[in-house]
Length: 387
Image 1: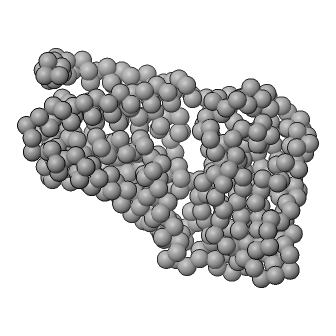
Image 2 (image 1 turned 90 degrees about the vertical axis):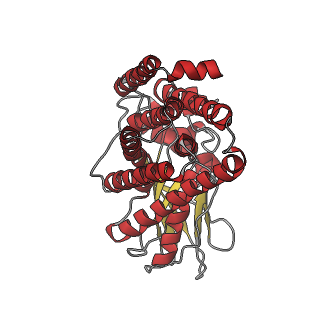
Image 3 (image 1 turned 30 degrees about the vertical axis):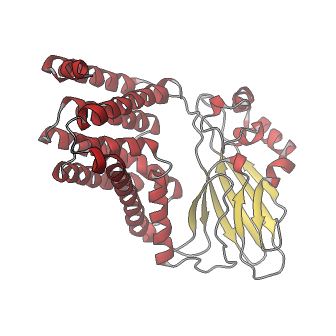
């Protein structure tokens, strides 16, 4: 291990290693990626006294193929991948026919409960784009309705876990409408009937804090490794604060700009670059031990990148202008709480007990950084060439 550290510490090998990362970076920037990752469906819900109507933007091919999107995050990994690809090549009319032929099963997976058990759901309409590039998924629209029993009982909405994650938005409740990111199989909070507000500003604020926190813990393994990379750089408080502050300021900027659609960068570019940022900070942990302007600038730039990744969730939810600052600030607070939880856990688990030992860097920092760098490089390769 000592020999390895000596080799990596030489200026010659530093330049070679960083040059390799830069070359990889630009290679991935120019590479294309197929859209096979499972994305959340988006459901706009209107609840009246008599019925619930839902407009769902989703990939109908995955539903008809029977892919368990609660298990598989990439359709290529599912046993039904071949059937999914076949359905993507169907014309709009052919795909509509396949949906209608299987509508009894599909409608049974949409879960609407008015307090007395599931309410039957009817398929009202379908809108399917032309085939286009079969390597890019189609965003189709499905309109459904459920007639509610006579009652004032609030309504819950969700769908089968196999249909994957769902962004649910209630449209008829004013500016403070209910909005939620539902995990596979999860149902909404009770939605009142009629055209009035469903949630106070504080309740909405709390939901966005929770959404930001869970986007880091437990869902954001890539962000967890990045924060650990920052933590491993130094046990001293000042370098950690400088890095975390730079990262926070940067991702706040791009989170706001991307959510407002002022800046738009394809996920196929953002995700591989986030993976490379993880590898970069981990490699720097091995090569350098002192905080420099260069390190701070790099962390700031990577923060801009990670903000684009955070914005994917808020962009899918679609914040209205009146909820924009509430949602943005709440989500950002949740992200920061998640990051602080990671740092605190790492400190109390390892650094508090062993940080003062002379072998801490050799035994903990360098092996952990090597592991993080390897994972980041693998993710970069996977997100570009295996997507």
